[in-house]
Image (cartoon, rainbow, N blue to C red; front, side, top):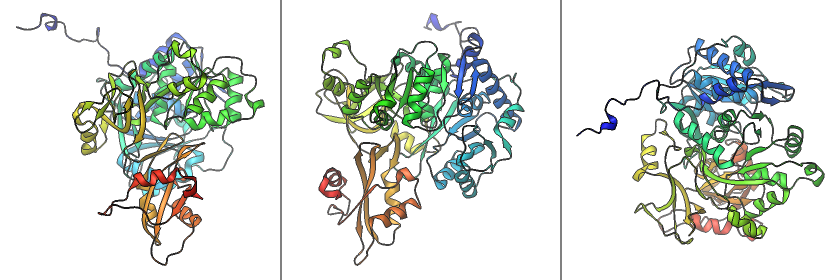
Length: 545
């Protein structure tokens, strides 16, 4: 017998609209047209201004043949054009690919080719590396130069049109539409994963929308927050905050470079209420001179994620007077999808114990269905005893569609109906997750993933190297940095500086090992390098002298 509630009660335009974060800017412009949306140097733009410019950008791209399913890559710092790209590009039905500005030309070329970029917007500062990448790429995209008035350094124009001229040529009344299907792709983000070749993580409109709402709920974010862009918008689309701020009709305070003086000045001048960043930025603020920190008299809410933050960092932020929220996630779950929810009972504890509790990865985001710790072999939850290790797994709407053009990796990531993070953790008796180790040997430096295999491949290209392994070394500034263990060929002689110079020729600077240890690399009887032994060794001061 048919379900009477499903007969004649179908979806129609009156009762169903696909979820998309693009709806947030439309509402912000309608309800709060005159409220400030963007601050950057002398630039002040309202939500009406910003919405108009996004529509112009969409129109200009559409006129150039950019449409549904096409890829538009951008290589931009946290400037107004980056905010606009998060709306203007998907308004055409295209997919936004935000490129990491720290990457080398070879990596960028791979992404342009793999993502089949039809257009590229590039800031003048990064024109040289983009020019080199385009020379290596088989793509011939439309290149749009972005000249930021706040940038006074070297660079060149490599495109056929400048961004402001390009936007000015667009129609401010461009009739964009919400996606017909909320499963439609909105963004492409590359993550190093566990191999040298990056994997393309694909987001959908639904997931981006829901993560925005979760961001608001986890932070109790009120209307009109003043948000400082310390987190790179190229990283997981700024954890979905370009759309989140539009949903609250807040202010995007753009910040081209992350520097302690610039951050504290912006917080004081603009009365910044919220910002996000990796542990390295919080440590930068904690260790800033006292006079730089003085004068902040309003509440500042900080969100931290990245390599598991040390309790000392969280304690330091609390002493600074900032209210810190610890979140956890990966590129594959739109940035943060778990949060260490604080309880009132914690307030009675001493600051050290509060920091320890707050350093855990926590529980699921409001609109994520589940986060748990499972035995990856049996797919059964581990006991909530705080000791038994398993793998952190997510399930729900705030999870990627999959890896672009990589069905094998997608199938492996979703084995058993859960997304496998590769992070080893325990489940505490109170239901809070706590990371213990990283099963895939990924190094997280300044919030960015580094593939140990990619670095090892470069080390093996040195003529004097016979064996090499790279593991994470704890670093007070960056969270983690690569440490290389190198075994030389008989009679070969090479210095650590020469090894580092060799790596700099093939890797982005943040991927280059900071330490090089020479000696026989420990191996099993079958020749497999024993990385667990190296992890123990890397924490020994004597090993790195």
